[in-house]
Structures are given as C-alpha cells and as structure tokens.
Image 1 (cartoon, helix red, strand yellow):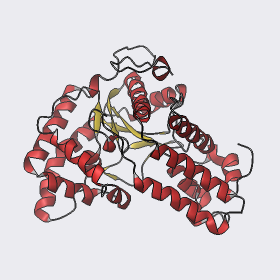
Image 2 (cartoon, helix red, strand yellow; image 1 turned 45 degrees about the vertical axis):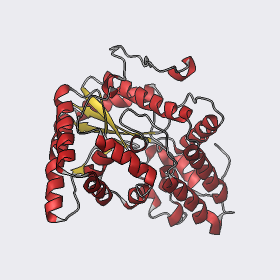
Image 3 (cartoon, helix red, strand yellow; image 1 turned 90 degrees about the horizontal axis):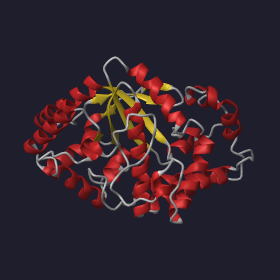
Amino acid sequence: MSEDYTIRGMTEKVEKASTTFERTNTELKRKYLIWNIDVFNQIARLVSVSKGSFGTGYPFYALDENLEGKLPVIEEQIRYNRQLVRDGEPVQKSIWKCKSCLERNYADMPDLKRICKPCPNVIPELKPRKFINRLPDIDMWLVCEDGKVEKAQQELTRLLDKYKMNTSDKAPFTSIDNVSEIAQMIKNGKFPKIFLPIDSHIIEYSKIKRLLEQVPDELQCAKQAHSRPYLPIWPKSYRKEWQYDDEAYNFIYDYLSAFTDFNFPQELKSSLDESRKRVVSENTPEELYEFLMQSATSANFRRFQSLELEDIFMHRISTWKDAKDTGLSSRVNNDSGDGISRKENRNDSDEERSL
C-alpha cells in the first residue's frame, strides 16, 4: 500500500470494510467465523502446555453456546464506524500523515502512545489506534499450565505466525486490506481463505479456575452491598509484542455475556459448570441481566440495550441450570500432529475446510 491516503480516503476505507462485514449477516458469515475459531482452537491444542481455550466478545455474545443462531446486526459498531468518518470531515482533504510514519516505524513500536502522543501531526480524534480498533476481530484465550506463560507465548507465537493468524495491529494496513477483502467476499457469497484479525490472550490454569469459582460469591456480595460486581483479570495479550494489559478486564462481564469454553480439562469444566449452576440458582434472569449491564463498558452497555442481544443473553443463561456439555470441547479433532484441519459433521465445502 504505497499510495498516500487523504483522511477522507482512509476513514471511508475503514468504515466501508467494517460496516460491510457487520451488515452481511449470512449463514456463510457464521460458518466463516466458526472456521476462524476452530483453527485457533486447533492451534491452541498444539501448544505443549495448553489446558484448553475459550472465547469472549463477538461473535460469542451474538450466538448461543453451540455457536448457533442468526447473527444480529450490531448497530453500535456501525455507529462507531460512521463516527470515524465524521471525525475526519473537518480535514478530509488533508493527507493522513500517520500513514507514512506507521510504514516506517510500526515494526519497532511496542506502544503507539510513546510516539503518537507527542507528535504534532496526530489529530486526537483520528489516532492510528482508532482506525485499528474499528476493524472486526475475534478474542480468543489460551489457558496454560501454571508457571508456563512464557513457554506458551513462544509456542503460540510460532504457530500463529505459521498459519498466518495475526493481530490487527501487527501489520495495520495489511489488516485493513484483508478485512476489506473478507467483507466483500462474504457479501458476494464467497468463503474467504484468509483469517480475521485475532486478539489472543494467555492466562494460567489456576487463575481462570479461581475466577470461575469466585463469580457466584462476587455476585452475592454485589447484591447485598448494592454495588457493581467486579473481578479483575489481567491476561498476557498478543499485541505488537506480548504484554500484560495495563488495565484489567472486568471478568464478570465476559463470564455473563460470552464466555465459551473449548477443550477444558474435566476439573476446569466442572468448576465452570458448578459456578454456572450456582449463578442461575441464586439469581433471577433479571438480576443477572442487571449485573451484566453494571459490569459492561459504556460501549457494551449500549450494545446490550438491543432487544436481540438481551434475548440471546436470556437464552444463554437459561441453559446453565443443567450445565450440560455443549459438545464444543469436541469440536476440534484429536490429531496430535502439527497439522490444521476441520473434521466435523457439518456440510462445509472442501474450500471452507482447507487452509
């Protein structure tokens, strides 16, 4: 991508890619999203210290626990995309000077803030991070053995690179081009052969197990104190370089809205099941929805004001009483070799199954 972009050209390119992807909610898109998730889970199984994986965020909160259902349009995402274009309107004919800086320096940027914050060319409303954040991605977590984060990081990095599954900020302009291509192909009814950006995280077994077990008590404490439920989680996240996030996530939101497990060992699966059984036996669906909204960020709060997402949430928690195995943990094949494939009982074409 050697040509210069005007600010208008850059904002409209990102807006079109993200909005086209959001609006094209076909069965093909659902299968494409599941393909991305399946491949990550197969990669996670190849990490020698892996203890399972799980997904959070989109599309997990928009589908049921079996990743079935009709994808709703997330209007909040479209609103953000439009706002990006509006932010650029006052200077839309100007050249976006950040582009040449990113092309020169991005490989050496462990933190965009270090260079962007003092730069006189940066427009506060159009920081490079904002363009990157408008792109759709998938949040996937690897659970690793205690004390093995660095080993998991090294192996997962190698495997993600091998199978060309990258974060959106590893090569931002390539990511924008890829998402544009993915969105257009799905709109045209064709299955893309490239992955969406992946936002990958690593957390130790004992930490996620403890968090799962703490949720019921935290919700009871919040109910008694009339306070917002909060359990912090600091994963190691795959940005430009692996780093521990400087701000904690509120695990309560992820647990209630989207937490979807894959290949958990029986002990960890039991902790999740027992936690969910307690949560639904000790709280009404309305109380749990209120906890969800209290623990959400402002953007996620607006998102879950959608009746479609509220209905999906209510259906999700209704399945927790029995806490039966959804079959997701057997979604990935049991091959132990360093190969990636999809061997499932779905009528996918050979093109969809291949990498």
